[in-house]
Amino acid sequence: MDTGDPDASYVYLFTDAEGALCAYRGTNGGRDEEEIIYDPRNPGVNQLQRRNAAQFTIGLAFLLTVVLPLLGCGVALGLMALADLLDFVSLTVL
Image (cartoon, rainbow, N blue to C red; front, side, top):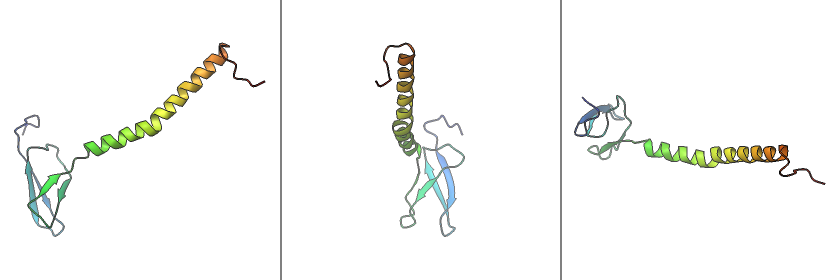
């Protein structure tokens, strides 16, 4: 099946906690393995778990809280060292 086909239908077979065979059918999917959210109280409802949004949010939070501040500090220290080296600003205290 061509994964680039938007009208493609995918079927994932899985077993529930009691060992019964269940199936997920839908147009979203295409990978060999997927995580499926399954509610045993309502066995007719199951869906693919999409981690893309969660991974994007965690990556963005990491970028904003760790990477950018460290990068900003490195740039600031580099500019201060360059300014001191070229005698634009004296960093020594009298």
